[in-house]
Amino acid sequence: MATEAFPFFRYLRHSIDQSKTRQVYAYILKCGISTTTYLATNPLPLYENHHSFTNTGRAINSVPESSFQSFYTLFNEFTNHNQFGQVIRLSSQMLSQGFLLDRHVLPSVIKACAGLSFLKTAKQVHCMASVSGFGSDSRVLSSLVHMYIKCNRLKDAHKVFDKLSQPDVVAYSALLAGYARRGCIGETMELFSKRGDLGVELNLISWNGMIAGFNHSRHHLDAVIIFQNMHCEEFKPDGTSISSVLSAVGDLKMLDMGFQIHGYVIKQGLCQDKCVVSALIDMYGKCACTMKISEVFDEMYHMDVGACNALVTGLSRNGLVDKALQVFRRFKDQGMELNVVSWTSIIASCSQNGKDIEALELFREMQVVGVKPNAVTIPCLLPACGNIAALMHGKAAHCFSLKSGISSNVYVGSALVDMYAKCGRIHISRLCFDIMPTRNLVSWNALMAGYAMHGQTKEAISIFQRMQRSGQKPDFVSFISVLSACSQGGKTNEGWSYFNSMSNDYVLRVKCWDASSYCDQIEEAAALDISIELKSINLKDL
Image 1 (cartoon, helix red, strand yellow):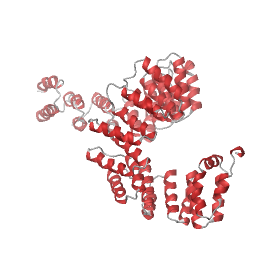
Image 2 (tube, helix red, strand yellow; image 1 turned 60 degrees about the vertical axis):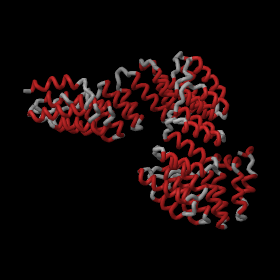
Image 3 (cartoon, rainbow, N blue to C red; image 1 turned 135 degrees about the vertical axis):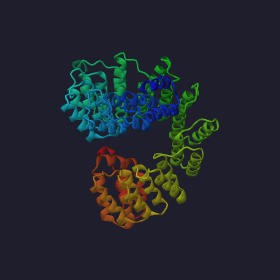
Image 4 (cartoon, rainbow, N blue to C red; image 1 turned 120 degrees about the horizontal axis):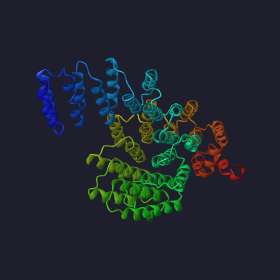
């Protein structure tokens, strides 16, 4: 009877209909032949082709004694589709049935641990691999290197990498990129210099990983230097290389370098690469070269949403908010599928440039067209609510963040603290602050500024002291808030004490010179004469 099912499988392997797969499996169960391991597990690839992982799990659970092959098939499919939770559960089921996680399965389990950031579980798997005799297997070790890098355990990753008898370029490139991404310049360059001793030949991915890594860790100059070294060693940069280095060039405002890279892009025929075009627009925007922003965009044959976003951001960054709004409206009217990044960018542009009502209107339009705001959109919108004391709109945004589960985000929380303070609801501002699971400098500054704004000197000083006890280092804005609070409350001695503390910090003294206009706020209170002292600071004395 079992042979009756075989023709069905041959037919279904070419079928795209999931319902037919279910019908065949129901037939197998009805006929009572699912106890045959081959027949019970044969539909697994069919379910996986349809990404029906629930049915896949049911299929394997129906087998009285699952085979190693059925487990192996599932591991591969779950891993390929990033179903990491299923991989972990499957490994437990496999072990409970007496199967060993071998060199073929272990990499999938390790990858799942990395994807879920399950460091503790990953370490247990690492120990299991060592005890089982797979601790020196190259595939297992390479997977462990990637896992430890993703879990931000670079020292452990390097220790595992050193155990590789013949390091491959994939693991080597991953370790290089990991160090660069976390700003470990010394470790990156040391490992880079050992490539000859290790017998590893760099490829394009190796170079791109370092460039992108340094760019991510804001070591922009190092990213540019690596790009230059790459070119000197006769590696041909691709679109990924160009996009990464252009971002660094823009942050460094190295316009001449940007022109050279643009020339290379034209020469290599990369002008229609969407990522490269977006990066060029972004670079010119950061370098305040507004004419080139529009020029690069207009040369595109096909408009891309990424390039549109870069154009709007570039125009806004250079104060051309009206033009940015006009361009955004044109894209919308032309039927461009604007995404959450597009809407968030234009809302942020309006909010940061005094167009608060426009920001609120855009937020409404965004939801009308079905684009869901995210944890970046809300912090961009809330300053607009605070600037014009639009409390009802601010509360609506707060409710949205609660329903969407993003209210615990540190940026959302900080923006809520600031918005409620500006809208005259300092008690709600404090409540929002108190329930934040994590706080950053912006959070502390927002609450301090709120208390100072409302003349609550004691509370502002208390928050400043609490911030210091927490280990958070105050910046110039922190000191301005506490000094303003002291001036309003007549706390002259405390004000001078905080000012002297600020003056002893070299970085803050330089910032005081650059931003001495803020001291007018203190001078107007007629309580402290700190502004005279601030304006008397001579840069030659620093």
